[in-house]
Amino acid sequence: MAGRFEQRPTRTTVRGGHVVVPAPRSAADVGAGAGAGADVGGRTRNWVPPWPLDLGLVLGPLRRGPADPTFRSTPDGSVWRASLTPVGPGTLRVSTRGGVVRGEAWGPGAEWLLDQLPRMLGESDDPGVFEPRHRLVAMARHRRPGLRLTRTGLVLESLIPSILEQKVTTDEAYRAWRTLVRKYGAPAPGPVDGRMFVMPAPRVWSLIPSWEWHRAGVDNKRASTILRAVRVARRMEEAVALDAFAAQERLEVVSGIGPWTSAETVQRSHGAADAVTVGDLHLPGIVGYALAGDRDADDSVMLSLLEPYAGQRHRAARLILLSGRTPPRRQPKMPRGDIGRL
Image 1 (tube, rainbow, N blue to C red):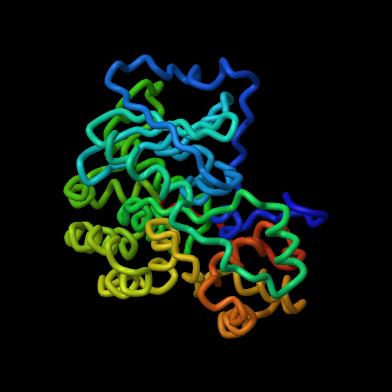
Image 2: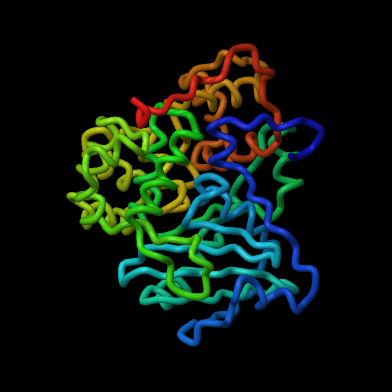
């Protein structure tokens, strides 16, 4: 929650929101969480960001629900992530103390994750070029000085859950991601307690039987889109070397991936400050209501309102979401479904 407005959770605000990361109670807490240090194969890196850092704000969009098996925040003030890197699976633990970021990593992908750490925490982002044009946006930026846009450098780990989120409720999408990763992913390396998993490799995704997609609540359209994407996994991952616009164009070559899915992906993989999400169920109404009092705004109205932020439209939309200024609900929620029970 930010300011005097009460934030109403929606599909959009959950994806773009703020994960609460507890502050360490003492210096002993840092480095003592969840068995840290128990794995002699772990590697470490210390890094000092020259700006105020809020781990929950920066890394929050990477969490796919409170029970995401690839993401955890722990009471010692750490964020844990399990990733399938270009050199293999890895687990990363990030914590801060006295302005110093400490990264600890395990598994074949440990070095890659530690090398990527500054960019994942917003080093490539430049919020200084952003100029608020509305009082609400200016207030939201003032209250969230630690907001930076993450750049993971990984495409599929954001693309696949974004496909699962197409045209369903958040709960349905998160349940599908959780079910499939736990069943077909690999246990995360390092001192984790067995509840964290690395997402399946592309070939493993391609071998999931049709009935298991159904049991996870994933319809044939979304499952088929994922299967088409993993067949060209190398080309998908190569998109990280392109600029965000070109990367979206490459992703959208795959049938079933449109502007909504590609934007949701490059926002995370590229830290794309201008990749505003179009085609969303809630975002146009939220932006329209916050900036113009128009709760019935569509994509064209939203893009018109965000035009003054050209080049930074995604950042502006995130600040609007973080302001909590959302229209009062006046219609039933999107109905929940579970095709796995059919």
